[in-house]
Amino acid sequence: TTGDLEWQARTLNSLGNIRFICGVIDNARACFEAALPLYKTVGETGLEGVCRSNLAMLLQGAGKWDEARTLLQDALEAQRRNGARLYEGYCLACLGILTHEIGNFDESRRFYDDALKVFAQVGDRRWEGVVNGYLSLLFHETDDLSAAASSARLAEAILSEVGDLRCM
Image (cartoon, rainbow, N blue to C red; front, side, top):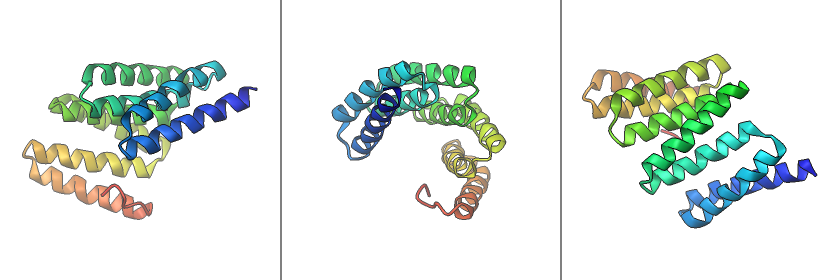
């Protein structure tokens, strides 16, 4: 049934995340790639976009920047079409991380700022804190130490408020 396929996709995506975190990259990629057509079959575009973002972050870690960026941009467009604002913010944050890592600081800053706007609109304080943490790193790398310190303090305050300091 459709519900069974959706849960299979969710399970595969979760396994992919666990394996990615544990460094079992090939197996993680296989899980993400197996989940994608299932999400498409059941019409779960929001979670399909999240799965694409997860796969993109895996590819980014493997240095496959162009492939990762294409996946993230496709996911972002899908999230916007479907009005999935939280997932849109997640895609923007991932694009910020990707462009940050390849040294495109101006573009990264725009992605981070856009992600912060979305997370503020949807009320996701945790992700506001996470993105402020990434902004702190960006500011530090561009020698804006005052902004780096301010963003770091804001990230810590928000993440303390929501009870999640794992990202600090």
